[in-house]
Each structure stands twice: as C-alpha cells, then as structure tokens.
Length: 371
Image (cartoon, rainbow, N blue to C red; front, side, top):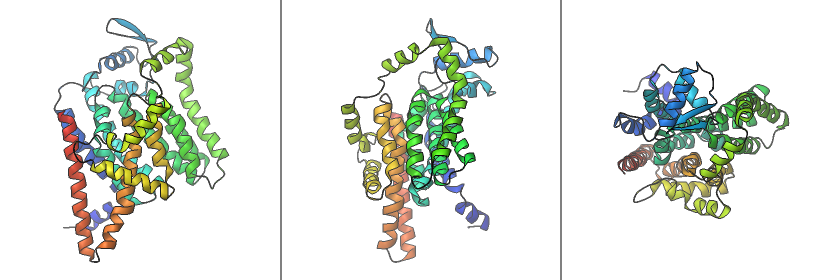
C-alpha cells in the first residue's frame, strides 16, 4: 500500500538519483562478491597506498613495483581516499571501486536534469548509466579505484558547471571549480577530459548569460586546488614521465580513428550481445539531441573517442546514457501516453517498457561479467 511518506519520497529530488544508485549496486555487487581479491591488477595501487600510509600522509616521490622504481606522477586523490580509510589496503581496493562506481549513475541523474531538462529523461539516463557494462566493469577492475572516482567527479563537475552557468553566481562557480580541481586530482584521463568538457558545458548551458566573471572564478578555484600537487610533481620529475605515459597508453587518437569510433559508438559503447536495444535508443537520442538543440550529450559521447583513446568507451558512457535517457524520457515515454488514451493503459505500458529495458540491462551486464 502506498503511504504519504512513500509518495513524498518518490516526488523528492533524491528519489531518481537513489534509484539509479540502487540499480547500479545490484548490477555491480555480484562481480565484487564473486572475487575474494581486488578485480584485475591492482598491485601498483596497493603499493602506492601502503607507501602513503608509511609516510604518514606525505606524497612519496617514487614507488616500487615489479622490482623497479617508478616516479609517482599519478593524480593521488584516490590513493589518499583509500589510505585515509580504516580498511586494509586490499579490502579498500576491492570495495571502494564498487561504491564509487555505483554513485556515478546517481550523479548522471543530476547532470541529466540540467542538460535534458526533463525529470523522466534524467532518471532514465541514470538507470542506463547503471546498466551499461563498459562503465561498470572498467570501473571495478584494474585501475577501478581512481577510474571510478574520476568518472564520478567528472560527472559532478559537469553538473556543477551547468548549474553555475544557468544561474551564475560566485559561490556556484567556486563550487564548480572545486569539483573540477578534485576531478583533475583523481585520474589522468579525467583531468584531460574535465579541462575540455567543463568549459564547453559551462558556455553552452549559459550562453544567454554574462559568464566571464563566473568562468574566471571557476578556473581560479580549480587552479588553486590542483596547483600544490602539480607544482610538487613538476619540481620533482618535470614533464618527462607524463610524456612517456601519454605515449605508452596511446594518448589521443588520430582523427580517422576517432571518427570511426564515433560512428560505431551506439553499438560498441553499449557492448550488447545480440540485439543492441540500448544502442538503438542511444542512436535515437542522438537524433533528438541534434533536432532539439541538446548538443552537450553528443559532445560528451564524441570527445572521449579522441582524448581518451585507451578506454574511450568508459568515458563516453556518460554521453551515451544521457542520449538513452533523452530517447526514453522525451520521446518513447510521452509517445505511450499519446498513443494510449486510457490512463491505466498508459501506466501499464510504461511499466512493461520499464521492466523490459531494465531486464535487458541486467542480462547484458551479466553476460559481460561471464565473458
């Protein structure tokens, strides 16, 4: 039976993000429970966390791994988060990626509210982000600690930038700058992407407003947050380790490769075996984004194919999820109400659609785990 408390919660601003996070936990938890050890290869991260703990919180200049000494130029926020926790190192590397990865779809809902301007589309964007296999798997295994943190903070940065652009104020710009700075401290690819995507989102979402002052505040706060770590790294090691790492991880893709990946993105980005339901919805959402002037989700899908070549599908998943949300929330959902005159029938049709899409997402996520 519905209670007044339940109805108030469903209508609250926290309901849609909470539903996305709950679904994300349901999708991701089996992978973590199935392993008694951190998924993938987290050996170097474990060593860095132990080094920071042994140095009582001081960022060490070098770490050791596989018998070699490596200059520590990696953004350190995720390591400090694990080191500051009360968890043993391996436990932190196993469980923190799960929770950080599960929070990202909730953040996608917040971003969707600003970019899509439709509560239903924002909810479906979050649910899609919870189900897409690429972001959840690459957010758990290997570098999942920093990658999941980077994705979460990237989405929050974009949401904060859109919020600051729509209603400019120094406090909102400062909050967006703080989120951008923390994103840069979380993951190398997140650093590069937020430097491009946050200004684009800020300008596109607030093009009717005078943005110069807010933009300067946002940039200044981000620089203040990043500069202590960046200064220490540059003084210790210079640019050489960064250049070497960029080259060994493919760096930015060539224009031809980026175009090829963009064309294949609706199907490849969702990694669906068999019928690519989410891929079709993403393609439909892309058409809607073009015709309705919702260009930012397309930018979020396309830019990572060039700037983050190594795992571009992981970072592009935010844009794909927003496109799926736009397709369902702004077209399919209203079309059901328009086609079915009976309110009860429309509600039933929406319920069937919801069950089918979520069931499909759960099946493909399980398939990705099995292979």
